[in-house]
Image (tube, rainbow, N blue to C red):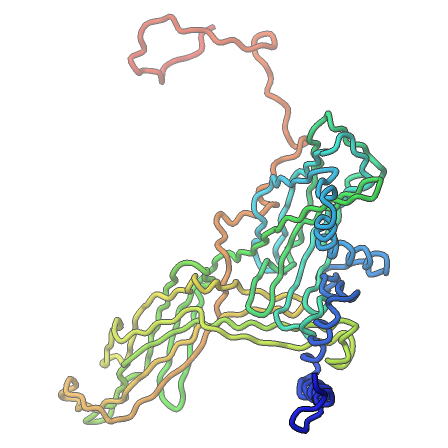
Length: 468
């Protein structure tokens, strides 16, 4: 290949093109390019998830615990890669399975008042290769927070944060599982605190929970099992909320009645009443006529993307992050009729049904300590036009040409349905020591049942008495 073509040095041109390309891109794009170039080399573990902690609950932050947490997050990818290398490694020494005995996890009430939820189940361990000596079997209740807009696009520590809410150590010393015994079960239970955020899958942030089991044999073989856990929150319905909005410089006032809670599926009623519509004078009157009413429900999501220690310099130091917001419309409609107008009393009132579009996968209202916050607002817009009419003939109204658009919004509490609304502490069965003693026996400490051999009672059973 010639080194020069049409008087241009090909080697020098290619080098200059690379430098100019990097210079035109920002730092994030440059970092992505470097990661892709090094992905074929020993820097591949950069793609594997790492597990820094988040401030949901108190956690031991020593180096040993953090190292174990990072190893568990990478174990799923490492085990998959090892299984592809050797077919014999695909056969695990034991088979793990989870059977949940408790109902779905749901918190009743706000985070400040919820008592939590009980979970219980059994971990099934089945040896695959005869007798297996297990060194440890540990299960973790994990909370994973993921952001769709991390500080560094290709950094796992910036994208996902994982913390352990609880840990089960099923035995302290090595234990042998015999193949002839078949499947053995290890029971577990825990009270999940009610202040943690519910499972949320937003547009720019998400919170997930899972049970992660890790079993290790004496010879170092590991078997893992992950099971997602859905945690929901339900607010009990209360009295309807009454709100008043005033629109100066007019005399119009809007009274709105809303339910205390709304649900992602189903309709809910909204009652509106507008006063101060008519302005009476000596011979004439001016009044406002409602031409159109539109409503929409907006979902506003806020997420703070934290920076890891490696990329903290991009946000000004460790412990800082970048705040992102995302707004979307999850329900809307318009009305041009359906209300009652009474100009003599100067009032317009009506009721309409509103609903959230379930096909858009709306999220419930949530506020997490890691920066994720989702709120919902109902926005109502009223288009009114001014009319003039004589007092003697109020039906002969003439439009004045003036019009206004009245806009107001109200906060909505979007939550799951509470059902019976009974938490675990309200339906807890009695303990053994609370069960009273059995009633006393009759006739020498035993009870007998005898057949009736008398005349037909003919339904007259009120006068029956016990004979001697």
